[in-house]
Length: 185
Image (cartoon, rainbow, N blue to C red):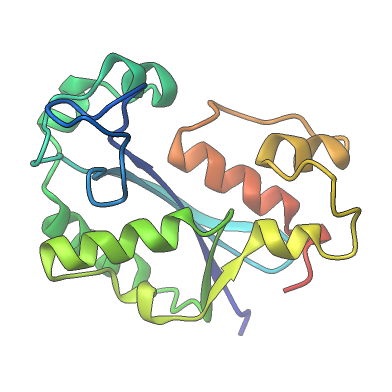
């Protein structure tokens, strides 16, 4: 049986400047997940399945223009999406047939945001209990320390062009899967 891994890229509420009603920049506690971009992949980068799960924010339900422009996710889309706890159940149900051995993301943001959501909602997707792989850190190992390590830069390093919309969770996750052949897991 092939050992699958789950690649996750979250999109969350965000602002260009201070959080509305607060005199400070955003923190994990201010941001709410609005998309789980999930890809089940084989270690060679073969995508087995992919799914986008949109989430309705409740703390600050109105998306900023900056957030919509950045992600392409509209107010209309999140307004009819299920709330976080319901999406967690949907992610768990979708993922049950694959039983990944680990989950991965590009950097630590996604793990930290899920931990903040767990504190806020008292629930988390089951995959959060699996070992986490920081694909960005793993990709950088053995490469020059000063090399740019954003997702687009990593793709370009291997002669690949980003496919889809940058900062859309499902597209970011699919592009991470394309890099797996060059990432020691």
